[in-house]
Image (cartoon, rainbow, N blue to C red; front, top):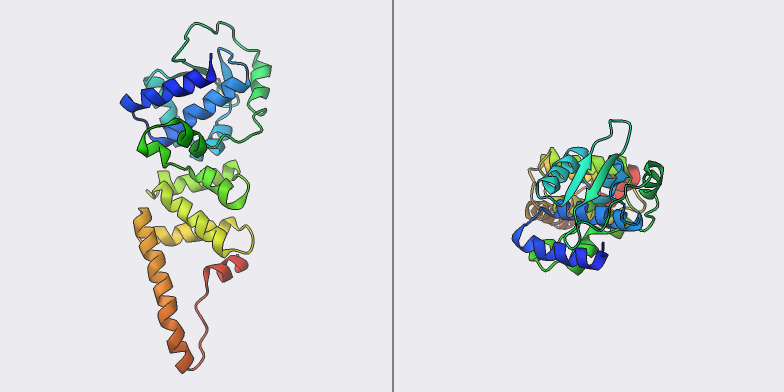
Length: 247
């Protein structure tokens, strides 16, 4: 199986078979893991690893995996709750090149051998000709961009719930990461979730709504500044940075 040909074929295929950005990123990660493993017919990957790489919850992973199966881009064999499921890439350019199944122990180790992070946004920007995928960045990739390291599976699951269960756009989660990164003097995951909770309880579900809330917050600060200069000193409203240091 030729990686370059497969990626180019996938890009062409997307033009007539649009996928959600997270489904595209999932396929890309599976392809890179298969490439790192030497393209075995079947290879094992644990759910938490894929969740962390793509930046999605388990339920969302299952949804996108099922969609890729329906589209005949992958095949999947569950191995029970205690074992990593087995994946098969259904190639575009050569469906008959691979006829062996990798040793289960080898495939189990292979999923940890991918030490370089495959950023979905970077891959999609390079490969895809569609506007929807070229502008996409997962919150997992954004976390790495902003803080210089990836979020762990627990954090990825927590952030994914704001999307899957609370209905926030992924761009809203990314905006919260950026606000926390700009305001905090150190990494504070609780501060990130506090910003997201503020967005949620304020009714912000889209990034435009989140921006409007941020603009209102900044406007209140500007309006309060001249009033405080003429009034009896009052306890100032705490900034994002101050809240971060307290957290």
